[in-house]
Amino acid sequence: MKENRNMAEKNQVTDNQFQKIVNKVSLITIILNALLSVFKLFAGIFAHSTAMISDAVHSASDVFSTIIVIIGVGISTRDADREHPYGHERMECVAAILLSTVLFFTGLGIGIQALGDIMQGNYESLEMPGILALIAAVVSIVTKEGMYWYTRYYAKKIDSSALMADAWHHRSDAFSSIGALIGIAGSRLGFPVMDAAASLVIFVFIVKAAFDIFKDALNKMVDHSGDEKTEKEIYNCVMRHEDVRGIDLLRSRIFGNKIYVDLEIEVNASYTLERAHEIAEEVHEEIERNFPKVKHVMIHVNPAK
Image (tube, rainbow, N blue to C red; front, side, top):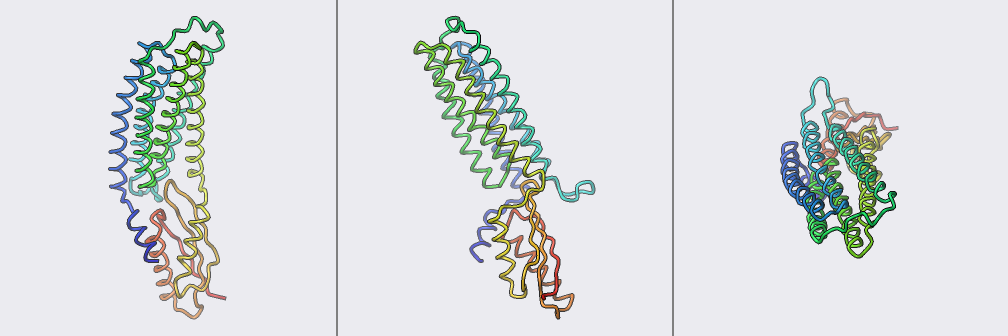
């Protein structure tokens, strides 16, 4: 019990801290992505690599997607108001859905261009990429993988779905750069179609990442129940209270990156209304203390049978 409480307090992040972390991570990724996309575009143009130009477009889309994350998280941390009595947490999911849409159409454009180059059949007309394209691919892989782990660390620390989506965007960019590296290397070894094929591989990675982000955000938008492990832990936490005789109902729903819980507990039928209310308050406080993701608990008290 004490261990759970200490862990909960350690992982608790205020809305102000949440916003500061998102802004710090986002600013760093925007700067790195802008520099990386310019470098890859330069390398793609001067080294005659369509795969590297496609990869540069992918990195440039990261800048736009990170801006979407900043806006979405900024709105999601606003306090509840008259029009939004349950808060604005779902706006972070909206940001993640917008991000997945941007990713999808970015990948679609790259895929159409790559498919056109492959279908033309006249591969001898395709120029062999220069060594600069290879260097750019290696730099991109290292940089984007580092950005993935950096963003993922803070996404897990503050439990941000939008920031985690942005982390996977970086990982998809690293994978696409690996595809670009293979394609460029293959083209330089005498297989010019490999450069265009690499762009097609990049398209697949981007679309897969877009689908995963969209699916996760959609689950959080439609009042998906909390995971079984968390509900079991909440159940055990409630039953540890000495005056709780049983639990008639325990339901949870995910609202953005927070959880709402509905409870019906059984207490001694002879207790006064005042004592029953005190027990409900104690259970309520214990749940919110031990589970930082739980934003609110609604408790109904039933007389024990």
